[in-house]
Length: 144
Image 1 (tube, rainbow, N blue to C red):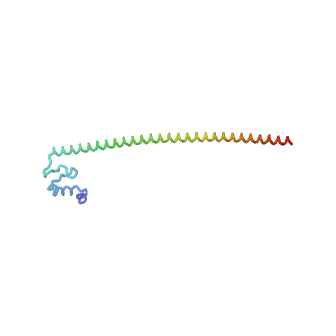
Image 2 (cartoon, rainbow, N blue to C red):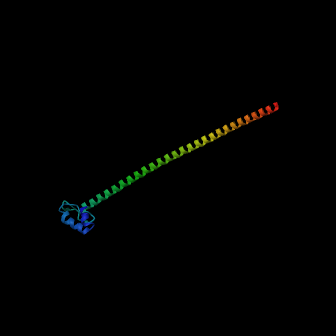
Image 3 (cartoon, rainbow, N blue to C red):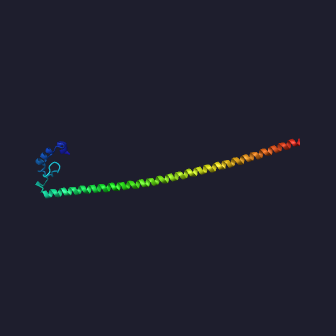
């Protein structure tokens, strides 16, 4: 961070700083700003060692990519399972609501039928009572 703050992305300044200070501190130069100048313990690496380092870096990169791919695959599987469970839950809820509506309609129909039946019975009683009153009235008139 301190180098980035001091030099930014200026490769020439970074290389010069590494040559003056980094080598003494036995720091490893990065492959971006100073290719071919990687040093460990103040000694320049051989081509073979640099190739081995590149190969190891490529293997690490490949392993990270595989790990990420596996993580994404697991995340997708988890999401798919969640969506499947959610869909099943919603289907069950819809089914339950439909059954409730059906029961409510049936109860409403039954209540209506019962109400109609009670109304018919009431009308029949009223008709019977009216007929009895008329009969009594006629009897009373006939007796006069």
